[in-house]
Length: 145
Image 1 (tube, rainbow, N blue to C red):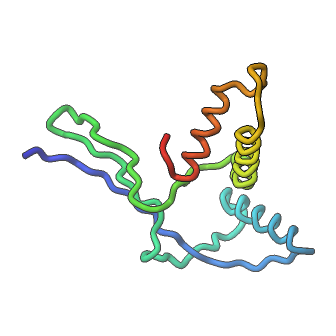
Image 2: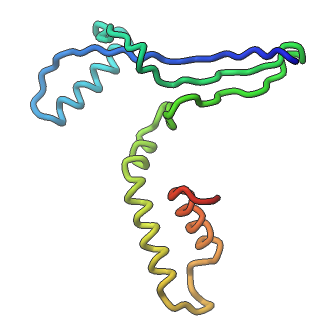
Image 3: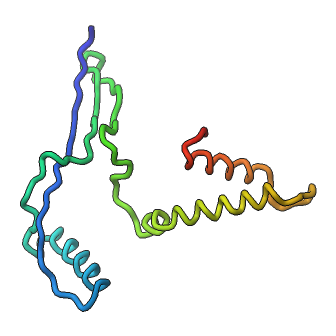
């Protein structure tokens, strides 16, 4: 039997609150985001103090390697939790995520229209695009592909 080395990681969330003054809801959100950016560079006092060890996120197997076989990597970044997306997101990523359901619904409507409309050989929607759209719809709904 071989021996493998496994490096685990788990992030423990910390909680804390601050009070800010704002003109309205949108301003409160803007100021909260600015506050968080400022504490990252040390401009504000760190507000997080209450560790919640029973609600850890980002549980991962960071790395498994075979030490006897010149540290050969067996696996890395294996998710052990239910969090799908834990990475830095860009503003573009946020817009896509915020509109993903609407984009998917629009795609379903286009496909429904396409499937229920008579076509000629000169139609503009090529078969490859049709197949890709069908595959995407199946994937989002939990089907094959």
